[in-house]
Length: 531
Image (cartoon, rainbow, N blue to C red; front, side):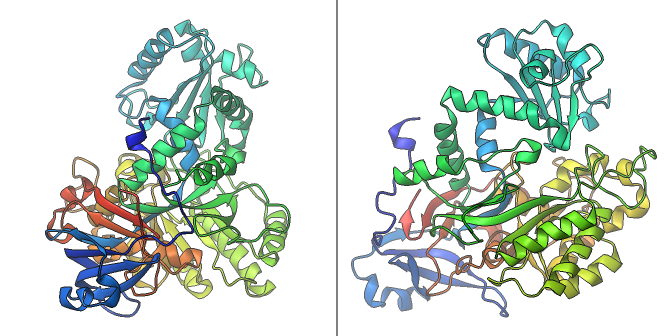
C-alpha cells in the first residue's frame, strides 16, 4: 500500500477544521417528518452545526473561514453504516481465491489447481464464494475432488454463505481433523472451527492482517461507509481481532467507526457501548441456525428439495434462555442470527423470556439478524416485542436462483419482507454480511429497490410489494443502524455527529442500476475528512 492510499486522522480528539458543503442535495430525514432536501451543510467540531438554504448556512458565524466543498447537485447523505459484516474476515479474503464466478465444479477445481501451482509450498490455498446451486453438478466439492488434483498445500474452500467449508487431506491433517480416505472434508457450522482456526493461525503468522484490514476499511469508506458493525463468529471460524483495530487507531489509520459484536463473552464486566466513539463493544452474537444455501437454516417444515431435513437449531431453549438472561442482565445487547422460520419461533420465545426478565439495563433493543423468513403470525408477535431487525437486501439477488427449490412456492410470501418490516415501524438496519455479499451499500440499495437478480429477473422484481422506496432504503443504512446502536448519528440534524458521505451523483435522479455503481466523492467521519 502506498502512503497516498493510507488514511490519516492524526488527532481523533482534536476538533477538525469547519467545513461548508454547498451546491448539493442534502438528504434530510427527521423522525416523524417526510424527507426533504437542503442546499447546504456546515460541519464544526465534529458535529453538524447548521443545515438549510445556502444563504442560511453561509450566514452562520462558524461558516467564516470554513473549508468550502463545492458540489454540482450530487446527493449528500448521512454517513452510511454496514450494520452487519465480518470486516476482518473480509480483509483476509482480499488475498484469497475468488470462486464466486465459477460456472461449474470443474471450473472451480481448475482454478484451484492453477493457484496452487503458482503459490509457495507452505501457503494455504483458500477458495471463497463458491455457490454449488449455480453449477450443473449442483453439489458441494469434497476432499475426494481436491486430493486427486495433486496439490501439496492445504486447501480450504468456503461456501458463499460461510456456513459450509471444505478441506483437502492436508488441510484436515493440519487442523487435527480425521483425514482418512473416508473423510469427505465437508464441514458445516461449528464442525468447521478447527479447520478455519488452523488457516487463521497461518494468516496471522504471515503478518499481512493489519495492512489488509486497513485497505478493506478504506474500500468501505470509498462507498460512503462511516461505521461498520462487525461480527466475530469464532464458533464458525470467522474471527475478529480487536488489537488490529486498536493498532490502526493508535497510528491514525482507522478510517471508520467500528462497533464490534462477538460470539465470545466479554470479561471485566464490559457492557455494550464500552469504548470510544471510534471503537466500541456492541454485544454478544448468538447463532440459532445456519444458512439457506447449506440447508442448515431451521425451517418449520422440511426443505422442498431435501425432505429428509428441516435444517438445524443450534441451541435448545433452556440453555439459550439462561445464557441470554445472564447477558441481558449485564447490559449486553444481543445480536441473534435467525434465518429460518423455526429459528424465528425460537427467537420470539427468547424475546418473550427476556421481556419477563425486565428492561435492558442500558436501554438497548436486542437485534434479530437476517429475519429472512417471517410468517404472518410471527410478524404480529414481533410487533409486540419490538426488536431491531437486521436485514441484508443483497441476499435476494444471490438467493433467488435457489429460493423456490429450497422452500417451495407456498413459503415464498414469507421471505424477505422488507417493506412489511419498515412500514410496521420496526427499527430496521441494512447490511452486506460481507464477505457473504459485496460490501458496497449502494448494491444493497439497488437490491432493495429492484428485488431482482443481476440480469434483472424476475421482471418487476420478486414479491414486488416488498420493494422499498429510495427514502426507505436509505434509512436502512443511515438512521436505522444508529438507532439500533443508541447513537446520535445517521441524520443530517444540527448537533448530531458530522458523519457525512458526498455521493458522486444525484441518487434521486438516477436509475437503480446507476445507484448500484455509485461511490463516495468525499467522506467525513466526526468532521475529519477521510476522502
